[in-house]
Image 1 (cartoon, rainbow, N blue to C red):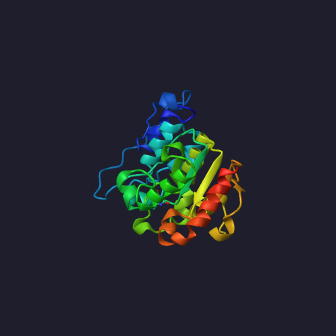
Image 2 (image 1 turned 90 degrees about the horizontal axis):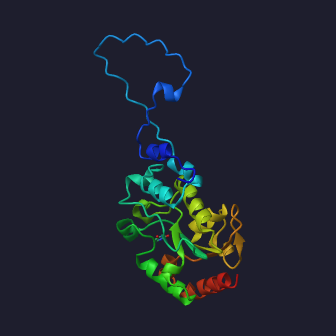
Image 3 (image 1 turned 135 degrees about the horizontal axis):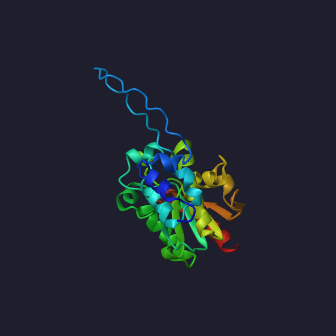
Length: 240
Ligand code: URA
């Protein structure tokens, strides 16, 4: 399972793995059994359960384990309001990876990124570069829909980051297109405005992969007059 151990997968499912005393500590001498407390009316304390953040183990996961971990993830509060997780879609050997912000209503319903109105425009933008949707890999900073389509906050993005990092590590694309400020800021670890990030080729701080930031297609639906600038960004990416 490519370093991601069976026990980790079980832990991710919330299944406690019991080991026999012998397996846990082969040389241990059996500890004295404490006396059983007498039955009283006091209810037993609530079990304290702090599930280990699943995303932390993502760095060692293969595609199957990663997809499984994401679909069962409860590391941040977004899991409480999602219909389902939205893992990512496309060619796992793609040269181009498109990174958006997070699933919207339609994506949450269908379990696939960029399938709503913004997705239609993204498909058209890709087509303009000579690429079909299936030629690239599409993923988001967060895998669960932020309620009301708000931006994911920094804790949510940080908690989900190991999943996106692992997707990037497994694909090793030649180019990452960050659509929108949230994607660009999270990929580059900065808070700089999109206006200042556009028009340049950045490099992923960890993987050294070129990143071009451009407008989010949802923004372009509201401000079609900026489509020319987005096209200039895509041409910049094509030249790399
Ligand atoms: N907006 C995004 O950033 N991602 C999606 O998947 C859909 C809309």
